[in-house]
Image (cartoon, rainbow, N blue to C red):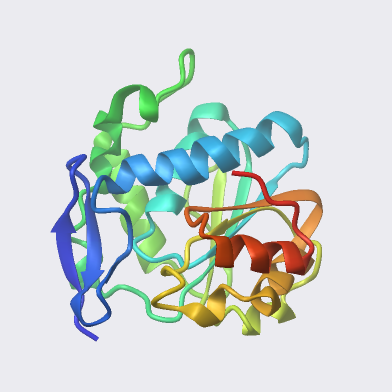
Length: 224
């Protein structure tokens, strides 16, 4: 499987797999998409309503690590303890993740900076990003004082073995239904549903009717 690092319209990079005709993030803007879908719609919403410490986040598809990095940055800015678990069957190689320019999320202005909060500098972001990618698998790694990461090389089906009702928030960031239809079924979403703690939510970029129908069948109440 050949992967290529490409530039998106907001100046941040993502990875494409030409043979599958997929990219890990929107070509219109990798950072912008992740901020809107996962941080603002998901993380900020849950943090405003959930008092759990640490907050437990589960990501389906670690991919480039962008969602994890933005979550780490939010945790540092808000002094919020976050325990982050991500599954990924096909991790990026060092030659791939070392090309990504995600330390530039510092330059996204209001998109990643909260008034009155501390802000990670570019070198700190870069070090945190690299630390996430080289961290040990299958155990929690303290990337910063506020953010711990556990990477699991599991499929979604295998994730059913994780302790149920464990997570406050799920980032569902699999490839689109056309590329990975098996991950957009009611059976797949039931696994996610069982992993969520009471009151937990799942967020995803896909709002196609086939996905919404499967989520509803799995027990979710779906809003756009």
